[in-house]
Length: 218
Image (cartoon, rainbow, N blue to C red):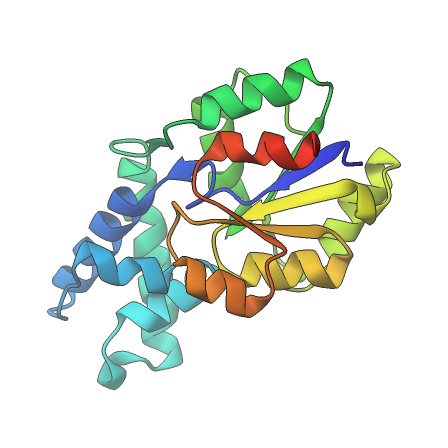
């Protein structure tokens, strides 16, 4: 029934929360702004760099000029520490091995800046071939716009109905639904099961290897 899987990156394949939180907190501290607990970043991440910065900044520092300056500072800080604590989630390597054995096509679509998205996949997921690997790029609509997801399906010659889309936020679920793919919510990521279900996820899974059950229904 399904021959391809489109993955989100942060909170789905890779646990990047600590490096993102530490980097943004360094930016905030340098400006004398309050920093946030790690858990708060679960709600800040998912809609791209600008929204991460806007959510992290206090209201009285949320003007456009400050946001742009903090985005640049965040890029610099994150470039220094993006791989210090980030790792694949437990169970992800086994899932990817099993998908490759089955001949399933793999792709990545993230709202993370494109350069960081490619760098992380090349460093932390190099054993597996993802085609394509795409992050946020200037002039290209970000998720939940389905344009890029549909283009990936067309590139592979696999109809959207033949794709599982695995992600950990309502943004991913909305993208999958709008693209005509089957939305699968990863409950180990940055948002909880209730949010994913409310957004319209067709399936919720608590461990990566449970995705295989959707490929091989009884």
